[in-house]
Amino acid sequence: MKYTEMTKEQRQAEYAALTEKFEGLKALELKLNMARGKPSREQLDMVMGMTEGMTRPEDYLSDGIDSRNYGELCGLPAARRLFADILGCKPEQCFVGGNASLQLMYASVAMAFTNGLAHSEKPWSKLPEVKWLCPAPGYDRHFRVTESLGCTLITVPMTSEGPDMDVVEELIKDPAVKGMWNVPKYSNPDGIIYSDETIRRLASMKPAAPDFMLMWDNAYCIHEFDGEFVPFADIISLCAQYGNPDMVYEFASTSKVTFPGAGISVMATSEANIAYFSKIMGVQTIGYDKMNQLRHVRFLKDREHTLELMHRHGQILGPKFHAVLHALDEEVAPLDIAHYERPHGGYFVSLNAMPGTAKRTLELCREAGVVMTGAGATFPYGVDPADSNIRIAPSLPPVEELEQAISVFCCCLRMAALEKLGV
Image 1 (tube, rainbow, N blue to C red):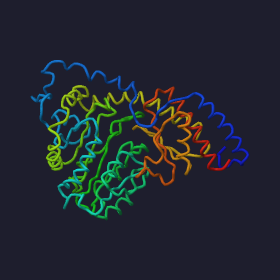
Image 2 (cartoon, rainbow, N blue to C red; image 1 turned 90 degrees about the horizontal axis):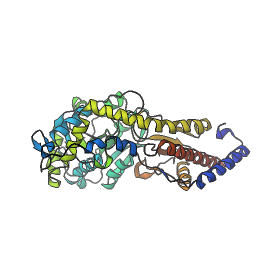
Image 3 (cartoon, one colour; image 1 turned 45 degrees about the horizontal axis):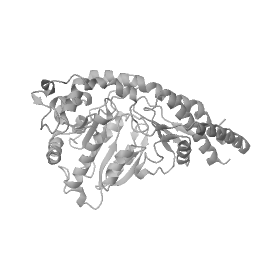
């Protein structure tokens, strides 16, 4: 029976039973973590072969370049070709960095503040205000990048096809709006794939700001765990087609392909942007870890071989997501106290609880030994106006631990809902 259809006496009885169950769960003294989308030990062990087989000096040569030495600021040509093959763009449009694409995102926005972009009238630090569009629920680390640099963050509602483009197209009429975050495939946390129409409207935008940055974090572009691989657009070519060749900055990494702490990342953008960015980055570094870039090239080989590896990742992740969704279907859905997405890829399940109950749910989870992403993290400034969205990250724990954790979560969610309704 739906909680909203229960009498107060029925809700009180239900709450008493859940409280007894909750105390039993606390007695287990669990220490389970579903706070971040970390690959599991099994996934990391699967790619250990990448560390083998490079023992002779000649093993470190690539296109005649000694990867052990200085140089190649934009990355080894072979690494640029690998990412271009995966993303569907040109090698000349790729800048290959270290293990964190987030660092390249920060560097590109920070560059706009310190130096301006190629189309900027002046560095953004000289402007009275810089506004930034943030589709939400979204990725907390994106929001922190632009918040830390002093941008005013503007929330854009997400729809089933991506950000609400009517809202976006109205907001970009303001020349102070300088950029927008996007996770176009298996968005964090909703798992939404932007529709072709949404992507077309984004690529064809005519912002009032000539130096607008369309930040395209394609973090989960090859991360299916259910069904066949879903192709995605070459956003760089699409923007150029609509007369916006320098507007988009696309990012990806091997963080959830090989080793998150020792991977490689890429920023893909127009050749003009690459030249401008490289000039400024050349002041900071002579080059990133090319030995690691070469290890990745030798291990991943090409797009086809990389997709085969990602299929094996999916075989590990799929049962974990199914365990979460099964528990929610059984314990939460019939009560009409939350709704949630059913992703086919990415790293998260996004749940919208009864308004006003997300913080309380996660507080109860912590009491019972289950750590999750904080309430509000998926919104700018860490404030969810409805106190509703909860990001579930099933990837790290083994299935048996995950089943315990999601059982705790469902119990806490139900208790918080009953408290909100009055018991």
